Length: 388
Image 1 (cartoon, rainbow, N blue to C red):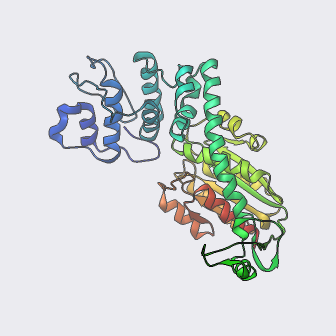
Image 2: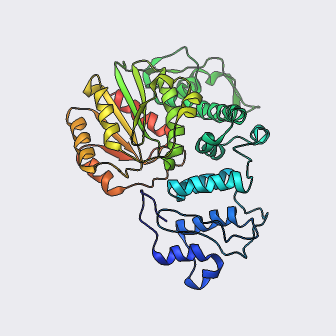
Image 3: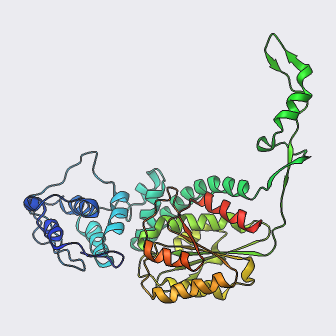
């Protein structure tokens, strides 16, 4: 069992997965292998006879012993959690078999076949990820319910990120000028205190404010900046796709900022026309497939209007399925022409990076910036660059 984005499992570990509990004498499992074991047990441990299941990944069979049974313990994975784990751990053809067995063989239809369940569940990002990964299995009725769930999660993300974007692009305090705009973050505490000292109440031990003062903010002119978000839509990057769609929507209306959103696997899709509707955008995204980063970077370079006023933000795990040498060459060319190039190893709310550090370092060596940022931090980074 292996993935194009990681090494094949050692033979001993693969045998341990095949044998299940009968292979305990071979030693315990850790890391991703333990996750694989738990995901397989969650699905196939619910039947009495498991000898016929024949699950095949790229590196061989992965099955369990016939005498293992499932349970309803609270620690069991939920359906969305299981779907997300399967997409994280297994190669594409194994994922397809597991999902097919879950729906057709075991009637685990809580997410992909039952609209009532989607109407009842508490919306969250984990469930959103599961919906995006399985929407191709949904009937039109279920898809309509799923779209409502996506809308609710996106609305919450938009509220949070819109505030962060406004703050990032709100300008810096100008302590030499005053403003009639009363905003808590612009409050001039010292001048307000001095102006109201005569209204000190000794008994109540407080000052009654008669006048309040606020600083103005300096906003530098933002002129003709392009921000091009280039997003890997392989299965492992679902959180990045979600947050990229929301980030692009929040950046869209800013003065002087022209936003583009590009998604890629082995093909490149320009989703810019859907940026104003992140729900529609997410429902169009096709997760999975290979990864050809250099091709996406080439496309980004072709749509740049003014190289020295352009920012390319590449969101990927840097596992290049195409030519790493060509990718490095393309990034070098963009940096040499004055374009700012940022590679993000993660764009989810936790910013926990898992990426090809060697290739990322090669991009840094030719002038790129590489890091891990939350959407709010990305907005702050872009704001700092366009004000230089």
